[in-house]
Length: 204
Ligand code: URA
Image (cartoon, rainbow, N blue to C red; front, side, top):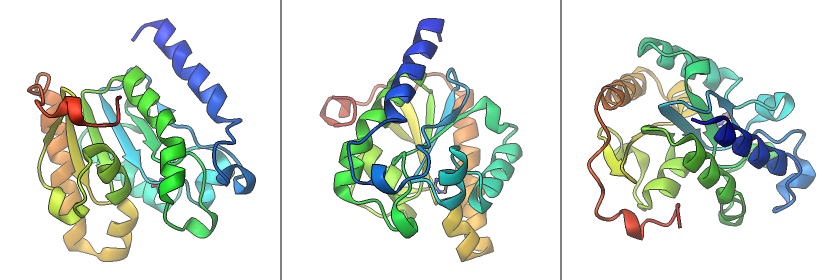
């Protein structure tokens, strides 16, 4: 990653922190752009900031974030070695689900993050990130458990850590298995080109 690309990412963030593209601009405390290594091989994409993230301006700093740090540790990675972002950069009031118009308004930021960071492996956390990137209207519990070719990269969908915290030990084993898949994908060379990639909308 060249310094120029790092500067470009900083420029995108500078635009995002003053964003008014959707009404969440009126209710947010801070924009939560993303954190980590701009040259990371692994990028994690969550849903949206919660209360603590909105206060601190950093993704996954609450209970779900502690679990995420633990799962990363189990595959030998620290938070500073990956890049973490969300589909939405601003907190929806009362942590409600992201609205389609909010996802649409915010998607340019995620698209530019993915293009600039250019990770080899993308780990999507939960339904919203997985649906947005994989463009499949299928629930996460059916999509998880495998690696998908995605824009010449690997995409690994998994459950959202908050769902694991609510759902018990069986879910933890599933997420652990998915993190292990991401670890394996990181050890591989570039993914096989995806013939359907041209039709996928995120990088248009
Ligand atoms: N949940 C998310 O999806 N993202 C965060 O940053 C925190 C909780």
